[in-house]
Length: 121
Image (cartoon, rainbow, N blue to C red; front, side):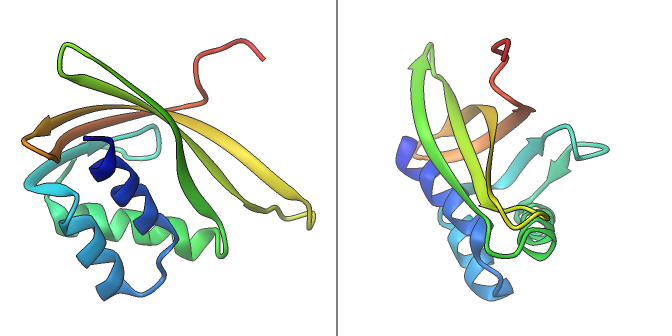
């Protein structure tokens, strides 16, 4: 299951629309539902999700998203993701997010993301 999660986040650094769509399609169900703090409402479907992910690569060129930890309980997977790249000041930056993921078979069917990991820093 974490393979589909890693595949999905690999798509975040792809600037080419077709390559990004192909990667996302291989990781999620056709009726994927996605939320995070930057989505004003639930994103439904692969096209909406690919467009949203494309905004990441457009607004943060050269940045990547890498799954750094996952664990699963009762069919729900928690994934910690490191988003990293060169910041506006020219220095390397890393920001973390945490995602809760439901699957249908090996594909992601629902994902809800949060900024940070919930730990006091």
